[in-house]
Image 1 (cartoon, helix red, strand yellow):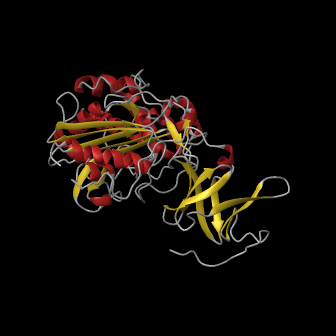
Image 2 (tube, rainbow, N blue to C red):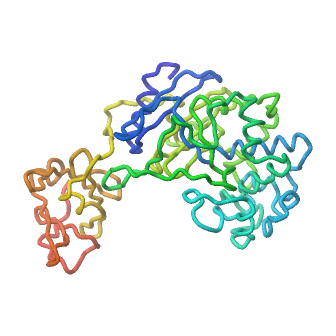
Length: 445
């Protein structure tokens, strides 16, 4: 790809369309030097975005927490084989788990803390978190298998706070962000930030997502940042910094910890190949919070790096992003995919029809997008039929039903019973015996 922006722009446009992303920003570095950045937004109510817009980075936050722990190890303040209970006496049933096991997600802790969904409601302070998580939720013995644990990183953050005598966030700011010049990375969203969004699967409309203060769980996923700051962080993860962490320790972090073949000490591995196929090995992390997805990976040999941030709860394989931005894959902007923008409003005659329908035992999703009804085969995610609203009628415009009328049948109470188009009957449950089936012939191709 070199530094030509056009292939990068095309990849970004395709990722945005395929993932139904309200907005997305990305940046690429080659040899440690930024060579491209881009931004796309289709959110009709959101702000204009640029590569400098701040997004929540989710679990990329864990890489910062891990570096703080390794700092303390290199200062002789702790050993990675030390049990977490040495520093956090209230760790209860997790007290015997070593810091290495917490860093590599091989400690057997459950994935999430006891209580309400911390990503949406916040988790309160450390005392409440520790009291509520006594070890009863443990899923395995330490070292038995890899099991990703956000709770484990809350414990690591508490270790940092207690040994430093300051909050986890203060340690992040003073010992990482300030020495590295990462002034655009923050605990709270700045004024210029992308709002969290969720995309309705069938209506393609946007729903705001909450922006919570995750409290004691912050070391697992709280932070906000920009593409420029994250490219700087990605390069630091290779080269190190004399006031933060040395390159030798960062290399140690990027060694898999058995049995976690894809995870080291706070960083995870990705393959730079089509669809994640084996190729050049990258290290970094993915991120996910309600309304946001993020990806940051760097090639330790070449210092090539890719960062992508988006404000969508789902829709993106964040581990595959570097393989598409860095691998030099040819992208035809018009080859087999459609541009996407959210629906602003859904007509009443269409909204009551959206959702899952069955033709026999085969599931289809009926969606509203681009002023059309789309019938998507849920086995292959392919759009099989398209319909438009035409003067009170629903008429096929593409697919086997082109030109045919889709008829809405109702029960005596006025609710939709089933749909029928040229003897093809669609019901809300498979083979609904209460609905007469006029046909029964196979779908033609």
